[in-house]
Length: 467
Image (cartoon, rainbow, N blue to C red; front, side):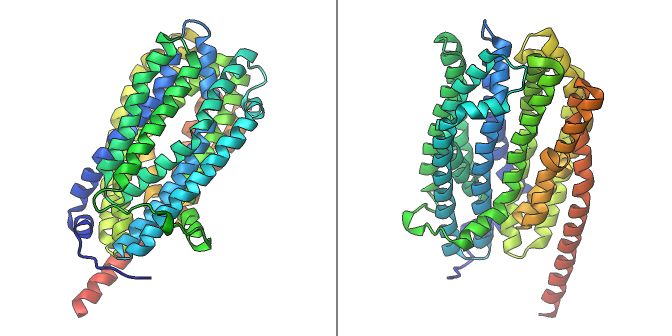
């Protein structure tokens, strides 16, 4: 492969800017993007909760289809992170030709898979809803879930491709372009929700339409943004669907697939356990708690996404000390931030749940679950930043294990066992216990990789002294 010069403006910016300043400059747009994305994900839940008739059933229906959206997002993140961190490492190493081929190939793979999901998802929507529903769920709720799911699935190709382009832009250091794309679509979604759901009385169908319109707009803007400046251009001639690029996408993107995909499995099991233990009120409550925690974690994830291009680019350039310094910086300030958020969640838990659904039973169940999660919330900084570091360095196996732990390796056994002994309380305690177990898995991986980075830094320093 052709190796190109490294002395361009982008290279200088990514390798010479002080690490803390660079991470903050890249993180601010991604934090805004993640926050707004989290807000518009919660917007459906909020406005559906204002429906005069069957609000709790409608909220439960949206919660029921959340795993489907999580799977679509998981596939989008897999292709986006897999292609993005590879092209970033290639750009750091001066191999722009390989980076260009990966960008176009990652996009093409996402488009193909998105179309397949849209077609087959709609064909089998009734079976999907039947599988996701708990045994006590009403017919009205499942009918609403079918209506919502059909429309969401139509938007699958746009949702997946927007995540791919967004992440490719971030990994190139173009976080502002990425922010503008997601931000515009999210704002459109939030604006359309009250109009379609309440004003035009379209209910849950309006929520789904607003979501898909927002995704289409984000997709268009991101495509346009990717064709400007120094960014890698998407070209049909660069598409190379072969074993090499597919393997690299899987290696770099599998952790995202496991993280998001297992989140959908976790939500399915959580909904079933909640429904069996407390009915539709419990499903609605746990759905709200899940959305709230995702919204709150979105800031930390956005902060970490500001670190990812710094990590992958500098790792590819052989600047290991910058990788290590960036990790410590993110863990430190991420933990401080989560401690502050956790205190607020614990104190105001009933008000937070009540904001989404003014139902005494939903508030009672949701507030208790939110307080359980608030107690261990700060440990997520180490978990998330370690996973992002491993993924960005191309440590696919370790990254996949850490990303699978929170919603899979640790969560699934706990949600299957704990409710049998503690009932609804066991459902509410599952995520906090899973997070604690995940930390125990994550720490050894973090320590071993940081030790290697330290040793490589010392070795590089010695070799420079002898030159």
